[in-house]
Figure: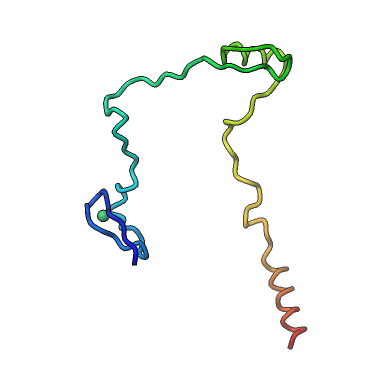
Length: 108
Ligand SMILES: [Zn+2]
Protein backbone atom coordinates (compact mmCIF):
# COMPACT_ATOMS: atom_id res chain seq x y z
CA UNK A 1 0.00 0.00 0.00
CA UNK A 2 1.43 3.35 -0.94
CA UNK A 3 0.25 6.52 0.70
CA UNK A 4 0.88 10.20 0.40
CA UNK A 5 1.02 12.99 2.94
CA UNK A 6 -1.84 15.40 2.33
CA UNK A 7 -0.99 19.09 2.38
CA UNK A 8 -4.64 19.96 3.07
CA UNK A 9 -5.30 17.90 6.21
CA UNK A 10 -1.72 16.83 7.09
CA UNK A 11 -2.80 13.19 7.21
CA UNK A 12 -1.73 10.22 5.05
CA UNK A 13 -4.06 9.02 2.29
CA UNK A 14 -4.00 5.60 0.66
CA UNK A 15 -3.20 6.09 -3.04
CA UNK A 16 -5.21 3.03 -4.06
CA UNK A 17 -8.33 4.92 -2.95
CA UNK A 18 -9.75 8.04 -4.64
CA UNK A 19 -8.32 11.24 -3.19
CA UNK A 20 -10.85 12.71 -0.67
CA UNK A 21 -12.86 15.59 -2.12
CA UNK A 22 -12.42 17.55 1.10
CA UNK A 23 -8.67 17.49 0.49
CA UNK A 24 -8.73 18.84 -3.06
CA UNK A 25 -6.71 21.80 -1.77
CA UNK A 26 -3.71 19.46 -1.66
CA UNK A 27 -3.25 19.93 -5.42
CA UNK A 28 -3.56 23.69 -5.27
CA UNK A 29 -0.41 25.26 -6.62
CA UNK A 30 1.46 27.20 -4.01
CA UNK A 31 5.00 28.37 -4.42
CA UNK A 32 6.85 30.49 -1.94
CA UNK A 33 8.62 32.25 -4.79
CA UNK A 34 5.39 34.00 -5.69
CA UNK A 35 4.17 36.83 -3.52
CA UNK A 36 0.54 36.94 -2.41
CA UNK A 37 0.52 40.70 -3.03
CA UNK A 38 -1.52 41.68 -6.07
CA UNK A 39 0.47 43.29 -8.85
CA UNK A 40 0.20 43.81 -12.57
CA UNK A 41 1.64 41.16 -14.84
CA UNK A 42 4.01 42.56 -17.42
CA UNK A 43 4.63 40.80 -20.69
CA UNK A 44 7.70 42.11 -22.42
CA UNK A 45 7.60 43.31 -26.01
CA UNK A 46 11.12 41.99 -26.50
CA UNK A 47 11.77 39.21 -28.97
CA UNK A 48 14.88 38.32 -30.93
CA UNK A 49 14.08 36.49 -34.14
CA UNK A 50 14.26 36.70 -37.88
CA UNK A 51 11.17 37.03 -39.99
CA UNK A 52 10.39 33.81 -41.89
CA UNK A 53 9.07 36.07 -44.66
CA UNK A 54 12.05 38.30 -45.38
CA UNK A 55 14.78 37.16 -42.99
CA UNK A 56 14.78 40.64 -41.44
CA UNK A 57 15.72 40.69 -37.75
CA UNK A 58 13.13 41.87 -35.21
CA UNK A 59 13.55 42.79 -31.56
CA UNK A 60 9.95 43.92 -30.97
CA UNK A 61 6.90 41.66 -31.01
CA UNK A 62 4.69 44.58 -32.07
CA UNK A 63 6.98 45.36 -35.02
CA UNK A 64 7.11 41.68 -35.99
CA UNK A 65 3.30 41.37 -35.90
CA UNK A 66 2.97 44.58 -37.95
CA UNK A 67 5.38 43.03 -40.46
CA UNK A 68 3.34 39.80 -40.51
CA UNK A 69 0.08 41.70 -41.12
CA UNK A 70 1.66 43.73 -43.93
CA UNK A 71 2.77 40.49 -45.62
CA UNK A 72 -0.47 38.59 -45.06
CA UNK A 73 1.09 36.09 -42.64
CA UNK A 74 -1.21 34.49 -40.06
CA UNK A 75 0.43 33.75 -36.71
CA UNK A 76 -0.97 30.58 -35.11
CA UNK A 77 -0.52 28.80 -31.80
CA UNK A 78 -2.74 30.51 -29.24
CA UNK A 79 -6.14 30.00 -30.81
CA UNK A 80 -8.91 28.27 -28.89
CA UNK A 81 -9.33 24.63 -29.88
CA UNK A 82 -12.87 23.99 -31.04
CA UNK A 83 -14.58 20.68 -30.27
CA UNK A 84 -14.58 18.24 -33.15
CA UNK A 85 -17.69 17.77 -35.19
CA UNK A 86 -18.00 14.05 -34.49
CA UNK A 87 -20.71 14.07 -31.88
CA UNK A 88 -22.01 10.67 -30.78
CA UNK A 89 -25.46 11.82 -31.90
CA UNK A 90 -24.24 11.61 -35.51
CA UNK A 91 -23.70 7.87 -35.22
CA UNK A 92 -26.89 5.98 -35.97
CA UNK A 93 -27.29 3.07 -33.57
CA UNK A 94 -29.85 1.03 -35.52
CA UNK A 95 -27.52 -0.04 -38.40
CA UNK A 96 -24.85 -1.05 -35.88
CA UNK A 97 -27.35 -3.11 -33.87
CA UNK A 98 -28.60 -4.76 -37.06
CA UNK A 99 -25.06 -5.72 -38.16
CA UNK A 100 -24.21 -7.07 -34.70
CA UNK A 101 -27.44 -9.11 -34.72
CA UNK A 102 -26.58 -10.49 -38.20
CA UNK A 103 -23.06 -11.37 -37.05
CA UNK A 104 -24.41 -13.23 -34.00
CA UNK A 105 -26.96 -14.92 -36.24
CA UNK A 106 -24.26 -16.13 -38.64
CA UNK A 107 -22.30 -17.67 -35.75
CA UNK A 108 -25.20 -19.68 -34.31
ZN1 LIG B 1 -6.22 15.10 3.33
